[in-house]
Image (cartoon, rainbow, N blue to C red; front, side, top):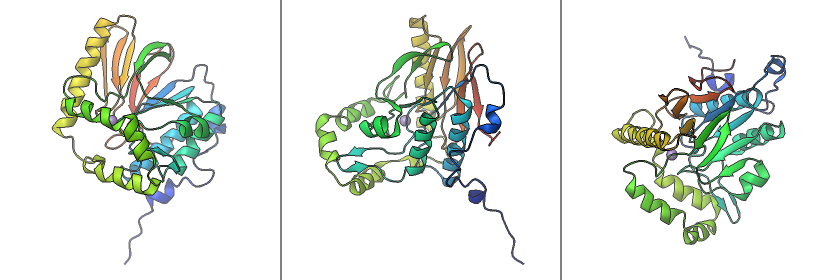
Length: 277
Ligand SMILES: [Mn+2]
């Protein structure tokens, strides 16, 4: 007897018309104040197909449901804009981002340590806001410091030295001259995301603790901030540091499916995506 298991991939297939799922049903819902939705560390290209499906599904949900979408670093397991093209393999998410922006929902991408090397293509062809430094801005009514989190907090010294080299003008020019397929292959050969799928390493937990300590210090030092949002640790976290003031880490879409909802007038909510609603 052959057993038949329905293909999860097919059930969630996002073919043409899939990712641009129309919002008709949701539009009929009264949404006086749509939330800002924030996620990070999808590591597309370095995660499992199931996780990537789930993330794209969440993103098309966000395109309908959010007033603004913020992807706070490491959306891509690797992204580079070479002189002759960009990193391959991201057509689907790029089209989805483009259609989100076209619908009038602004999308902000923060460069993370895996995808800091974006630029004109993301800004001009995809239409997103692409940031390479932390920013302070008002999101969902909260004065928010937004940063990916790499290089912040104690430790991470080796990374800080390395990132200086990897972001230098010389490196950018030399790497940018490579054929995209070769550059991508080199970059993937040094990316370690694939080895971190199923375990929390001590590194994750130490980084999570270091980022939390950094954020709590910063909240104490800067009373005008209501919220600090980081990613990078892959550990979802929401702490109320003082009444009405929070530190949030949006976790990841490698081990989790976590995202932050900022609805004006309400407290931040850190949630786990459980599928289309
Ligand atoms: Mn990161």
